Length: 220
Image (tube, rainbow, N blue to C red; front, side, top):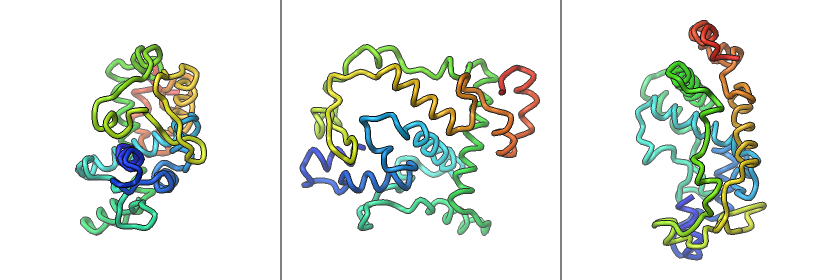
């Protein structure tokens, strides 16, 4: 988003990540181009799942998240990177065939394992998946650089890429709840509690952790 703000804030004189290219990237890396429309909560939960799965998978390969994933690039006409690059790199290094789906699945397994560990150590699922209160009560104001430098009015792309400002706004509690509902649903977790489900863990070949979670009431 900072790359997009640089393009937007300099009217294209700096940066290449146009709104059109941002939407193209969202379609490939975030699951839907509407995930790049910030005037709606739609598709944000599912996009977060994809981002997290890829981030965990990158950590499994010990790839620095300062550089990876290469989701945008000036070397293609669309501005979008190659979502299969990490999987191909893994295959080249190990000789084991891996496609993007398997790569993301490795990250999904890690995300579910981390969730189980947090629950075992005392977190309570949805009860603890919260934002700090100021997000709901303190209006958004001037930001430090680079956002404040290139986007003083806190402008974002909305429906069909049309720009709008979030300056002076707060997070809506209703919107946050919807995003979390969508996130849990996309994760295959119980929407009401935010707890992993037995089915999801078995689908991910993590059935060995099911008994301990079930005995502690930490699974649905």
